[in-house]
Picture 1 (cartoon, rainbow, N blue to C red):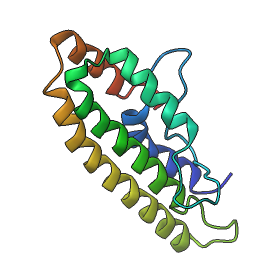
Picture 2: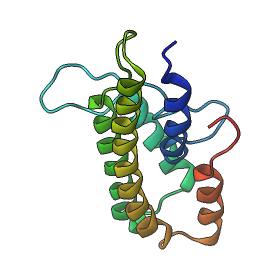
Picture 3: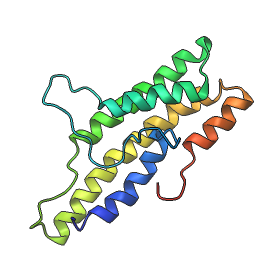
Length: 146
């Protein structure tokens, strides 16, 4: 286990909260390193697509809400690609400075993703019914261990 692992886990929690569709049976998106095949252009990991589909179902997105939901889904995909490209851990022989530098770099990628997600989510949230907002509040609220 890297010296960075606990710090990365804490930092990843903020983005994970936005990418997780919480059900006992759902896949978690954005937790841990996301691996992509060497392809041009890179495609988002499959668990992101599963999470997007589950989020669509949980929120019961209407046809009128589809464009705003698609904006959220696209940000989720972009964030997954960006995180996959970001260095996750320095080598085991890294110094404390190199560890911190890697953490800062990864956290900056996450923060940029959170800012994009906030804008997209605000647009979608404004179109949701009260029942949908209640579901969204539960889905996007970070919980213990996230």
